[in-house]
Length: 379
Image 1 (tube, rainbow, N blue to C red):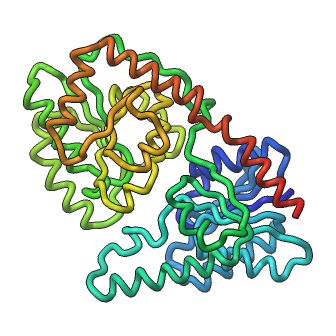
Image 2 (tube, rainbow, N blue to C red; image 1 turned 180 degrees about the vertical axis):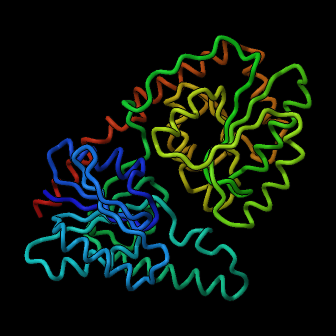
């Protein structure tokens, strides 16, 4: 079959789209193309056609028409859309093609989400939320099936569209990209990292408070910090840079921008303990952090905000802890416990990798993904 991935929010070499779904389909002898509106690019990589255009500044109408033109050129049998707007392009294409084109909505984000409402206040915020919500529900009605990245995000769609087929394809990593990572010989030097969007809501301020307190309370402990990420708004930059200045004096900081998938994995490989202290709000509480599974596959302990989504999915106590993200003392205590008790640290390192190898890896769910795609082609 010919299968097209459409995305307006991700670059073509996205970890989920390219490195997991598209590669699995291509390895199973499907003809695969990825079209993203994030960058102008046309090439073939590992038997996958990457055929993209730069469309961030285009109007919604022109963007839909452009995606439709790419679909007309590729002529797919199945279209997998990552955003609701692209379901309109997929449906427009399917109406013109004789045969049975199947449209799948791959849902990994809340829509609308907080970032869709950023900068809006009062009535305008509520009006935008309602408008985007109605649009998303309408667009969802146009698809033939759903792929859900996690359980909580599936609930409204399963309730409103109970007859549409669906499957769960979570964010588990392909361990071919993450080889076994031996623990450090000692923790006389503590190596920490922050990765992803740099913002207060994603926990950057709380992360800085933790590492600064560790450095202040343990002057003989060398603390090295990598910041791997990006600012999405000017407000994010202004808020976070105010916090960096006082912390910078006592810490070994290195700043690294947004990285592609494989370089990102290489860059975080020397982290000793992974920390993610995102705000425990409604959206985050019901959103499973993708990085959790990559951190575990690295074979390192994790400390995450206490989120319902994590409790439902993972036995985190076997290789880490959940904590109140605002309780700096508690998080510092958890980190120092690993430094003081090497045996406990090694147990959690081994358990983390074991969890990835036995439970949460792409090889466990890839066959179900292929069966789901094949089942749609027979209807």
